[in-house]
Image 1 (cartoon, rainbow, N blue to C red):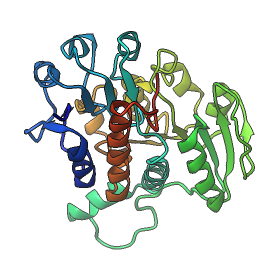
Image 2: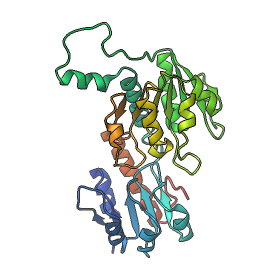
Image 3: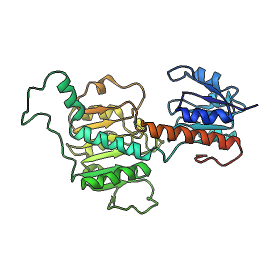
Image 4: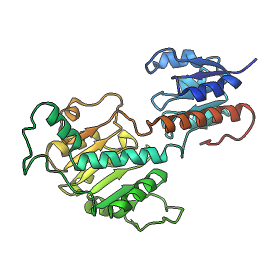
Length: 317
């Protein structure tokens, strides 16, 4: 008899087919995130769990699954999982790093260009019927070419973003809380956080959410930024103090922001939604057909490997 795997949301079909070879699948039948109680009910007889970043896999959920051997996150992040508690119970926790690096870097650059050149704002202006012809002062934005890019978090994604910046002849500075382990094949300058915030024209965040990075960018940090600074976040929403971001944008203390993540997803403050000088995306950093399929297959292989007594490709505990 095949072990039961609980899947909290349907994922791309190649991964479903692979999982069906090894498991009896229980799949969330709804086109929505499960409630906490639904997670508890769904996981009860499962030996394996594939969850999303939006699922709160806390002690209560884990305790409801006495047979559970592996929690495989369909994401790079795993701050939604009680990893320490799972480890105490001998449950492997896995994620999907690497496969979404380039796609997330692409989206970061889409936000950089959209914010600096006011692309979303310009499209709304045109669709409302406000475009009456070329004007010398219409929708003036900022150049990207030759500017200073400040990268906070120089891991895989940060480095992929930096590589793309070389095509724009940018000066690249970065802050990382630990030394970068590999030699970068392009010119960069490591600096402290305060210097980066003062000198960068465009600041982009590529950090995990931890106790140390929670609200890393707040009132004091916004005060250090240039008046024409652009802030990009494709990492985790709570790395920015959202209330202070809204103030900085409302008071024009920075030029604009581009966000793919939010402090309390999917709840986004109305004050943020009302602002014109921010580009807002619905957490689509890895949302390409190719990448989401790779993520799903890696999440599947993580679960299969643990159940077969092998070392999974990406285990975090």
